[in-house]
Each structure stands twice: as C-alpha cells, then as structure tokens.
Image (tube, rainbow, N blue to C red; front, side, top):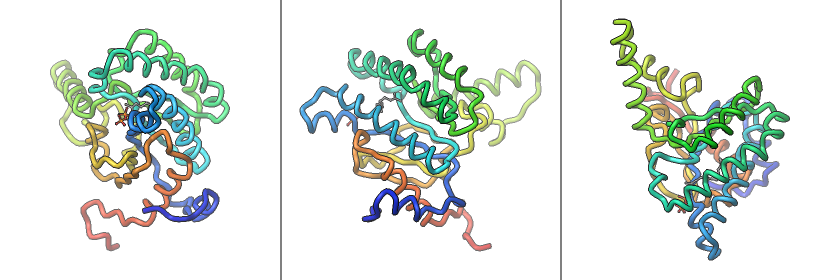
Length: 249
Ligand code: FPP
C-alpha cells in the first residue's frame, strides 16, 4: 500500500510507541535496475550500497533498534566469479567507508551466516568492524553473509547435538533452537521487507520470521529510500498481529 504522504508526513504519521523492534530486508532487484539502464550488474550492486545507507539511516532516525540485511546468500556463489568478487569488494569498501559513520551514530555491526567460508580478507575486515563497533548502543545492523536459513537450522541442530553428546545435558526446544541460531540474542523480526515484487522468502530467516509481517514493494532495491522504509513501518502499524490467536483481549 502506498500513500501520497511526503517523507515528513510519513514520519509524523508513524506512532513511535509501536515501532517494529526488528526489521529484516531482502534487498532484491539490483540486477534488473542495472539492466533497465543498460549498465553492468555490478552498477546495480553499487547503487544498492547507496540504498543500504538509506535503510540504515531511516531505522536510525526512527529509533528502530535492529535491522538485518540479506546481503549474500549461500546460493549466490553460483553467480559468475567476477560478480561474486565484485560483491565481496563492495562489501569491503562499505566496511571501510562506513566505519566512521557507524561509530558516529553508535551503530553496532553483526554478521550472520557461514562466515568462515567467506574470503579471508573479508573475514578479517568483518572482524575489525565488529570489534570496532561492539560497544555501540544504537542500531544493531546485522549483515546476512553466506547466509541460508536451512543451513542455519542445520548448524544450530548440529551444535545442540554436539552439546548433548558432550555433556549429556541439554534439550531440544524452541528456545534451545533459537539460542543456537546465528541470530542468538536478536529479537525475531516483526517486519520483513522485500523489494522488486517477488513474493518469496528465499531461504531468509525461516525460523525467526514465523510471525513477521511481510511487506513487498515493486521498487527495485537501488531505488529504495528512507521514504519506502517509513511507508513500510506505517503499513505495518495498520495491521493487526494475532500470532494465531483471535486478537481479542
Ligand atoms: C539482489 O539483487 C542483491 C544481492 C544479491 C546483493 C545485495 C548487495 C548489495 C545491496 C550491495 C552491497 C551491500 C552491502 C551490505 C555492502 P539481484 O542481483 O539478485 O537482482 P536481480 O534479481 O534483479 O538480478
């Protein structure tokens, strides 16, 4: 649902008492954005990096405490090597360029995914950025890198089984699984945004998004602005969340 409200209009229509605590985003459409302009795909990814700033800024301005971005999936290795290399280079550039701003705005960086399979230089930059921002108390920005929700659940179950075998203690419960996921410590997302019109979860946060509200826009990720995020939050606030109940109190 889109409205004609301006960015300021949207901002003032949002109820700050009922903000989503955690917004997760499937950033899709970089390739199509580039194709429409007869540009190489990587130009779309570069423009996508600018949209990342918009999303982060919007959450920061609103006071949303957690934002998680699907930046590279376990399936993305199947893309041409040159595109994968450029995506990794862009990520390193982002970490280098944004570090000062992240500390200025007290943003804490976190990564979810099979990070040990990422190129060593990327792992090193990520470690540095996480370390440099770990005391920040503002927005927690989680980047999903080499992430797949099924892989995450497999890894979590392996962890639980190892613990059980080692100590003979432990349980298999929703709580234990949640705590063994990469997202341990993060609240479940309340709002899941997907750009470029596709109605799919694409193996993103399958466990955690069980009760998330989905908001899909036709806007391609590189065109995504703060205004789009405010619109998503406003629409989210108009929905009734019932968690399987009747919503009566
Ligand atoms: C999906 O578009 C996007 C990605 C696979 C990568 C996301 C990367 C960025 C937004 C840029 C860098 C990000 C950070 C955090 C530095 P697509 O290529 O699948 O688009 P298409 O479906 O139109 O081909």
